[in-house]
Image 1 (cartoon, helix red, strand yellow):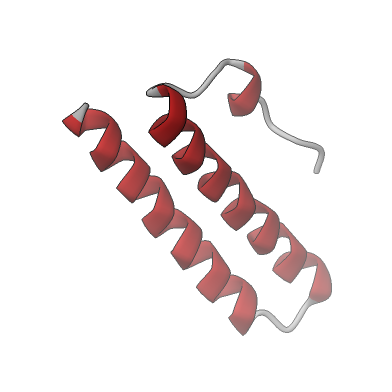
Image 2: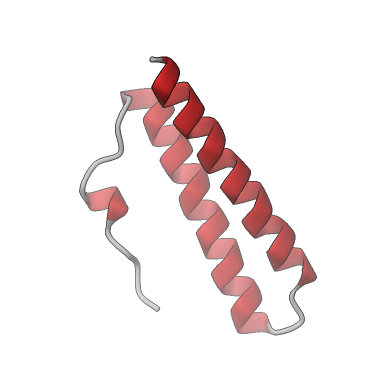
Length: 64
């Protein structure tokens, strides 16, 4: 359980960093990519908190 909490916290830190990068971006497309990454890290953190593990499907990359 502790391992999952640590992993979820790590994912939330990564989401925060991506949101920070998004806020600093001048280019729309780059900002959108950082925002998408932040949302993905947040979703993974929530999933781990709920289920204890990310599923194979959630780890698949989304379109570029």
